[in-house]
Image (cartoon, rainbow over all chains, first blue to last red; front, side, top):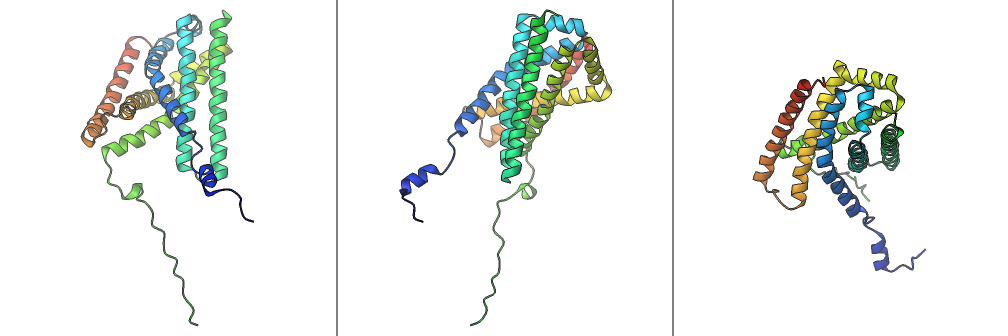
Length: 128
Length: 135
């Protein structure tokens, strides 16, 4: 059966999905945000390691610590989703395995990220 | 008519990792991916920290017990090294993206710089952690 599509129309339907630039920029914007945030996170881990449960709750309950912790977690999970996605796309070429791994990456980052953020908010806002 | 034997010729392939001589910029590129994947595990540990804190004093003590063990500390030391490497090399990548330092000489020099930074920063952080009672 012959196609009624013009050669130009066919060519326009091929090629990239045109989403690459957005992904590329998102990866770099989150990377830039994570430069100061990870340095703060290293300080946070050193502080938290020296505190017990009640000390940790008091520490995370200050508005600045809570906000920076939530931002660090959110940008980290965003960035690692973007990063591992590229790793999967580079090395896994079978459609089924690739799709499964990309979905798994999305669900793991989404679930773990949401659990982490809401746990911090629960502790920090709960007045425990 | 004589039968034509069809010889299936191997398709040419692009050079892969096995035929390249190792060089520094190649190692830093591969390390960036490896440390990135390692930090994926680190982020899951961070999520476990948040969950255990929300769980109450007992679960938090259990989490601190695991991370305070020798194996936990070893993992944290590796994650510190991976984190500082990925951070330093990430800045190197962002500099390249802005169009600077992509010539061979600069790329080799910044590779050495990033590795040195990662090792020095990791040791400094663990010394500070030891001095502030975090260990």
